[in-house]
Length: 321
Image 1: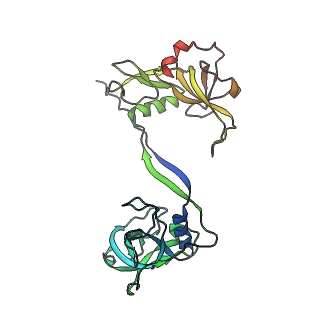
Image 2: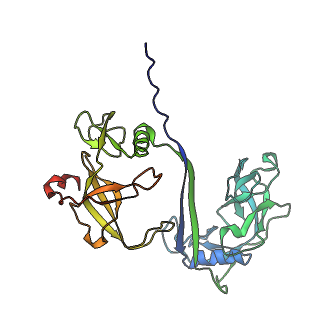
Image 3: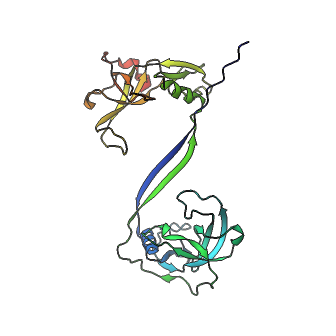
C-alpha cells in the first residue's frame, strides 16, 4: 500500500502595513500641541463649563463649536490603569509601564498616557502623578514623555483662561500608522504562489458555476461552495481595461508614465492585475493580447508584453471587464 502524499505546507510570512498620515491642525489642536512644546497643557471649556483635556473642537453633547481655551495643571489623578509588561517598539517607554487615564487638576476629562512605575503593585486608582516632559519637544503628544508618581497636593483653583497664542505655532503633524502581523494566504493561494515559482498560473474551478478563479480564493463567492479543482490558465491573456499611472510610487523603480491593467488570462473566469511593458503607454488598449515576462529568479511575472497576435474581439472579454 502506498502512503498518501502530505498536503503542501501553507505559507506564512511577516507583513508590515505602514502609512504616514499627514494632517493639518485647526486652531484648537494647533494650540494644544504648540502648548505641549512650550510646557503648557491646554484644554477647552464647553458652554456647560466642563473642561476637556485633551481638547476637542466640538462639544460631544451639543455638537457646538468650542474655542474657549484654558490652561490646566501638569499634575493630576489616575482614574484607571492597565499594566503593560511587554512594551512594543514605538511605545512611550521601553521598559514595563502602566497605561493610565489621568484627570489633570483643573480638567473634567482624562488624558491617556504612560506612567513610569517600577511594577503594577506601585500603581493604583486615585494615585497622584505629574507630567514628565521630554528633553526635546517639537509640538506632539510625545512632548509628554510620560507621567511619574507625585506626592504633592492638588493644584489650587480652576483652569486659567489662555489665548492660545504662541510664536511659531504647530500647524500640521505626521501621524504614522503601522500594523505588524503574520500573514497566511491560505491553502488555495499557497498553491497559486507555489505554481508561480514554476512559471505557471493556477486557478481553481467552482464545481457549481464552473467559473475559474485566478488568483484562487478557496471558495466561490457566488455559489458559496469550496473550490478544489485546480486549473492551469494562460500564460497569455487579454487586456480588459487599464489605467495610465503618472505619479511615481515610493520605493518602486519604474519610470512614469506606465500602464497598469486588468488582464484576463486565457481560461480564467476573472481578470487579475499586471503592469504592461514592451509597448508605449499610449498604445495600450482594451483587447490587446499580452504574455508574461519573467525576470531571472523572479517568483511572479515582472510585467506583461504584447504577443503580436490580433486584438481580441470585444465579445470575447466583455464579461470580464
